[in-house]
Image 1 (tube, one colour):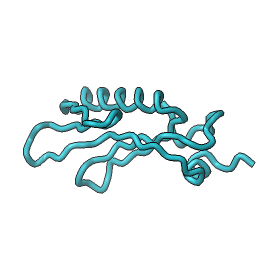
Image 2 (spheres, one colour):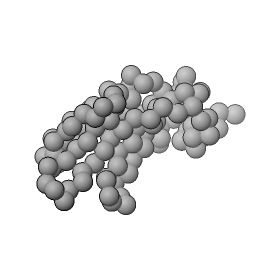
Image 3 (spheres, one colour):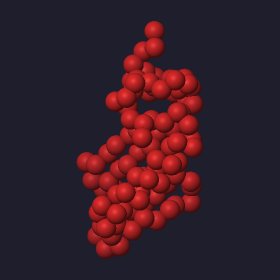
Image 4 (cartoon, helix red, strand yellow):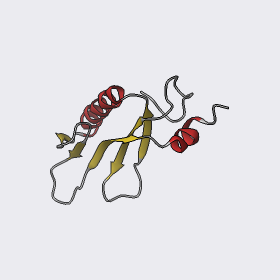
Length: 102
């Protein structure tokens, strides 16, 4: 899986994809990974949803858009987690994630 802590992958210059994993209603549990291709990001989103579902016992619900998943226990007071994919073409976030290429 790609991660912002890794060296900048070759070919990541403009469009890229952020995969975020957020605890709904909580101030903790946020993660943002960057992937150079939509295909890699979609695969990582599905893998993460399946892994977290198995680890926590939550049900995985695919949402309308590809790359979006809701993980929940089904209990009324448990908002759960959301895993989602977002396309981005801002070069500044690549600079922050991977550092300058100059």
